[in-house]
Length: 64
Length: 342
Image 1 (cartoon, rainbow over the protein chains, first blue to last red):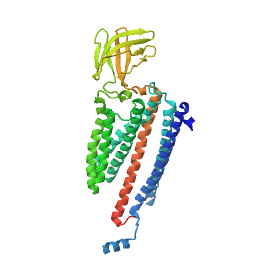
Image 2: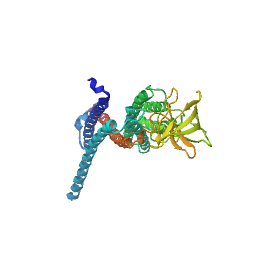
Image 3: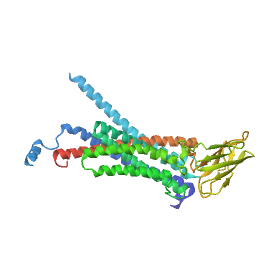
Image 4: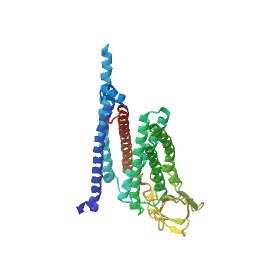
């Protein structure tokens, strides 16, 4: 592994490390972006959607 | 009667799908763009004379600092909009932009500290630039602390927005003005934006041969031609130091400074930036290591590519974070409405 720190190779080693770091960050961001879009899609769907039966909610409120 | 409505709805859906596809394409393009900037930073731009490979860090350091200032301005604008319109999405955008700005501010500080270690020999030496960016970091850390200390959502948003406006006002002063007011900073302020001392001072053998540059007194004693070189004999008096004699030179063939002698015990260099033998005048300047880094066209192009890439990355990041914050808000609202976590 010592050859990676050789002055003539070190600049390419540094570049490879920087590229790997960027690719990892970028992949993570893309994944996060996809999840955020899914969340947004669900948020926009909600007005017409009932997550729990109305009767259950009313029963719960009346018991409080 | 249904046809126009369904036609409009379909058109709207198609436009949204196209927009989404374009946004996805732009994100992939940004990934490739930044990868290209990294390759250019290491392979395409030349080494900077006297700094070696350390000079390459400007491609990351300055754009991160630029994004910091942009992010804090955007954050301030959204805070003002929140106070005006009271929309939760404006508050989420303000927080998201401040968070991304804070992250980039840390990156700018870290890359600057790495540069300082290589060039100045120490990670941190309380240079005016280092001190002002630390103060800025503390101001925004206090913003996040303030928000997390208040439980009531409306109060938190209102007070946070007011504080953020004050924080945004300090940013230009701390990033751009304060470091340039200092007479003695090792930070290469003249790399891109012209500071107060970037132009140097013109001295004349038969006229004003003594002048002040920052807190240093310069005296031009002679100009001597040696082939293509013009060597200036200069006495420099700095507060707390003996008079130093330096002989910087200027290359007439290339039209650029040749030898830049360093001051005793410090890394500032004395350079002759322009010379006119007929009138006996010379423009002298005191440079910090890294001054004029962007003089090379390949470096300048890579620098601008990096600025564009980082700006696009900021826009993506803060919008993404704002979306997630709105998601959190939506979940909290559902919990409040239905009385149990969904």
